[in-house]
Image (tube, rainbow, N blue to C red; front, side, top):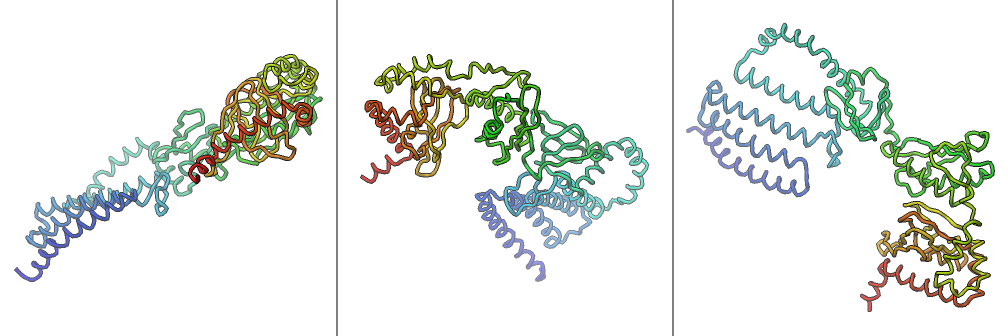
Length: 481
């Protein structure tokens, strides 16, 4: 043996095993990091490295000619391994979905599939032409007439392909964008050589051929993920705009799908029997119908809560009788209700009648927030119907449930201290009707009836213990002691 042969024997005997071991360790590390490159290196280790070693053994050690059948077969296996490895590398570097690593490059699915196809065709052409000696030029000439017939038969398909390539280079949208094309709109969930697939908020899929898409005007809404929508409502001339407009804008509070600060209520016209208002807001396209339904539901409770009158004719499909909104007609119910509560049994009949006449009855829907942490209370709230949930921030600055309150329970007790703010937020769990005793009247009750003041004081102390427990202060004090 000459020196060159020995060098190849030593290289193959030492370098290949060492390379395989090193690749194995690198692959394990990358898999723990969930790196896309792990799959590429695994393909390289399993497919490319062994076939490369076998090809070098045949050509350099055994000195078998490249034209021999054995060398061609092993060479074919090697180039197939190259295809598998390169496709894995493309899959790791490029992605048509959300990037799992910051170094990945986002490309459209059409470009991604085109690149994979070019890699495959180039290497297959090399195998057939260079390795096995096929004359690809003559084959292309022989297939020319047949290709023309096929092209005529598949002209629509080729039109979609060409249109898809043009869309790829112009890049008017990408997967994840919300677009409108003609009368159709939706979220782009797939792009390929033939068509684009849109997902609509009504949970149906729309497949638009690239040829059709290229001939239409495309509107891309994705520069701003929220889109402006509006609802219309009419209120009586007896309800001043200065009162109505802030109420309408507060309807959007706490709805995550609406962009904060985007709500704007305004007057659009004066009708024969009402003032016509519109509430504009910006919302995610898929959530338009859900948010619209939530706003109309909240509108019902807000109208009852603030004694707003919706006259006839109206533009929404429910009916409010203004007489039902008058607190005066609810005085007997409020009076009977308060007389049953232990905290109010120490009050005389005259005071109970005064509370029933001056208290306000308010209505809230599921999900609405009545009180917020850090804001002052406007009165003492007594639950007539429904359920509420009290929340406080724990020591980790996370919302923690304090308790749930039902019929007869009281919250907003900090209203007896002017200037004090609520230590909890109160959210509605079930449709709520609440009696609100104004702060001025509440202070008068505290001053005139010591037993009532004692009951409220006990309520504040017990509520404070629940709040401390929810915040985690109780556990901390036990640990420190």
